Image (cartoon, rainbow, N blue to C red; front, side, top):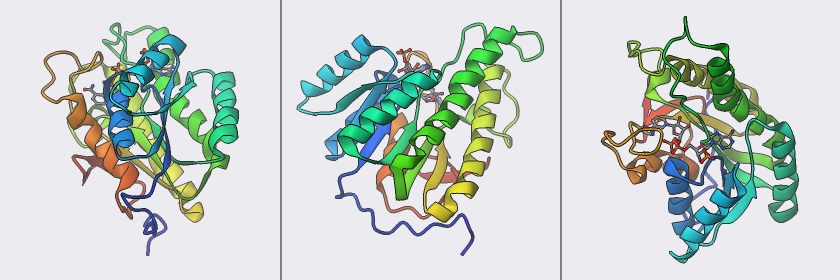
Length: 244
Ligand SMILES: NC(=O)c1ccc[n+]([C@@H]2O[C@H](COP(=O)([O-])OP(=O)(O)OC[C@H]3O[C@@H](n4cnc5c(N)ncnc54)[C@H](OP(=O)(O)O)[C@@H]3O)[C@@H](O)[C@H]2O)c1
């Protein structure tokens, strides 16, 4: 068995897991939370804006879904550490960490000519954010735990460069690289680390022309979080491994 083929057989669809989803007050993250809550898991809806986060929780409450809110800005290490303490106090551990929060900036038009601010903000949120999340939450993730990175086909090193939002695409290529290294480093602890692309999804980020609904976009994340899966260090779309 390769170092990256993990034995995760003890988890089933019926087991109730503690699952944290970053940037989940709206869009795909919100839908991931909703679907996981419907399955009966203990879901932590994390949002950087307290009011938006609370509104999202209340929206789910109207659907008879109870989720736990936590304030969390993935670019703020103090905020991450505070969240770790809160999760530790309330749940003692997490089974699945879903790094979903990301930005795609309107000014993101060129790698060669764009401002360094666009580069810094995008990389700090989309790459260093997930890295810091993993590093800080790792003590709460035990054997059998899972880390899921929300990536994008825009970060693919196999597909041709599309030209759209190039800094965002670079950030997702970097996130993919980070995923593989975390998978390698955490294999000995039996923690799987995979990335997935939700497809082009109708959200504030994806825009109105996107062909997929948030429900469809969330599907692979929910599957990666809950199904019996032996893969680690892989890139998925529509529940299938795709090339990096
Ligand atoms: N939509 C697509 O077509 C598509 C395609 C491929 C991949 N993805 C990926 O899917 C994920 C979700 O995207 P989406 O379409 O749902 O985007 P979205 O609707 O714009 O939602 C992004 C979420 O990330 C949060 N966020 C941004 N910066 C944050 C920070 N520093 N700390 C904490 N939260 C932060 C936002 O919070 P605020 O509400 O406070 O801004 C929001 O909740 C992203 O990783 C994205 O790259 C999306």
